[in-house]
Length: 100
Image (cartoon, rainbow, N blue to C red):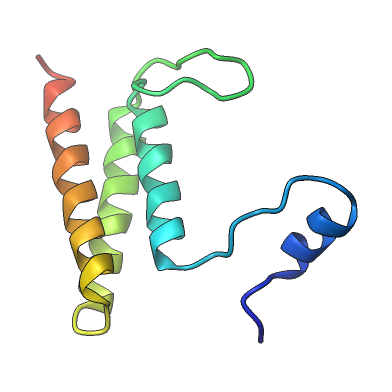
């Protein structure tokens, strides 16, 4: 299977923006952005509105990133491991600050 998914090919051929290739870093960054949105710290890109923080859902998204880190331990490139660790640190810090 190639790097480009059918969705990427379709977007490019229909004149729409070409989507980035999906790799572990892109996936984890997407989950991180989702967690920030769920914590009410990032606005919806279309509506420019933030939502009320949903601690439980954000915590589950952070736990998903933690699970991915554990399940991929020993199989990550150094840059991927550093990215995941940095994102988890930042997300945990922001999560704790929700109570302040």
